[in-house]
Length: 215
Image 1 (cartoon, rainbow, N blue to C red):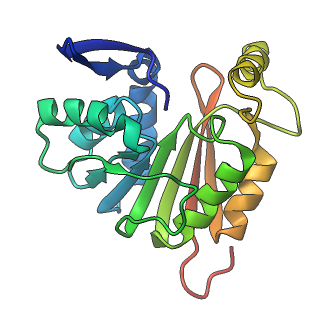
Image 2 (cartoon, rainbow, N blue to C red):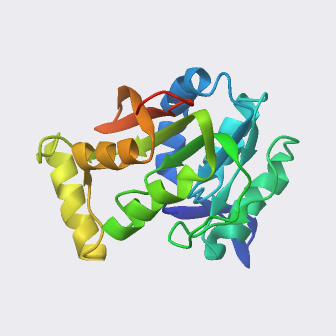
Image 3 (cartoon, rainbow, N blue to C red):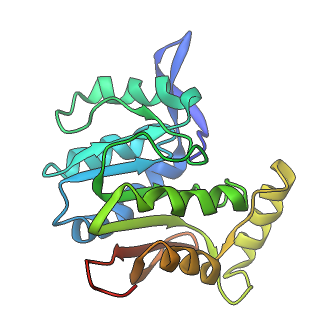
């Protein structure tokens, strides 16, 4: 996720703050309560500011919620975690999805928000290759963000957002649902539900196939 501002903390190293996280955390949590109801170990990829880790970890107490992000974002995430002091949310770990295999513990739930459109296409491919060795059979993957369908934007605001993404970096773009779902299928994942979310976003919920079950 991308940090959109700062608040609190040491003025020399302020605590990151994302308004988008504040806006979307409640509807995302409503889905995760069900999608992760049988999980015990969750990995969040691209924890960004750290706000989601605190909110979801605090509201899903049966889970160990492991935040992760690229090394540059770890210190900011840990400011949120230290302040919250949640026993089930350990310090964030560094994770670059393009560095395979991932050096993280195996888990039965993976969550990421607003990351696939920031990564280049090779990064998205690495994301799905990397999780194959981390997500346990029967585990859940939930991905939040905007997606295109049949090659078309779902709203005018998403079309403008895609233009903005391209201006920031030409490899960034809203991804086609069909392509992402194909990568998920190749990684042994079966789509459980495609949730409509506020502000023209989606939350895609997959499950990793159990032994003997076809994807």
